[in-house]
Length: 143
Image (cartoon, rainbow, N blue to C red; front, side, top):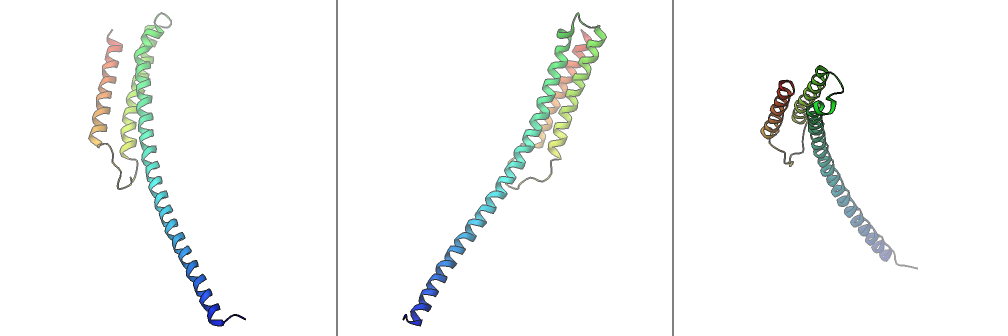
């Protein structure tokens, strides 16, 4: 027969080992939760940047299509229809540029440690592109 003191010592040792395993597991779970939170913040930032880029990409495609409408549709449709098509596409490009900034500035809360482009830079770049749209519109109807 085994000594009751030895049994108690072994049980105490197993309990201590089990407590160490549980403590390590709790630390791993905390690290995992922190990592998931960081990754979720990164996904939020990347999704907002992709959305902004999609708006600007759509605007640039519409602007190029509006400018190219005259060359593509020449001798196929009446001149007034070419002007109307180009105007609609360029106006849509302007709308997309405004929506890009509006959407980016109103995208909700961002993680605290996130580095973002300054608001003034987004507004300045999109304002310049809006001026390009206006110049394209004038060029479309002037010549």
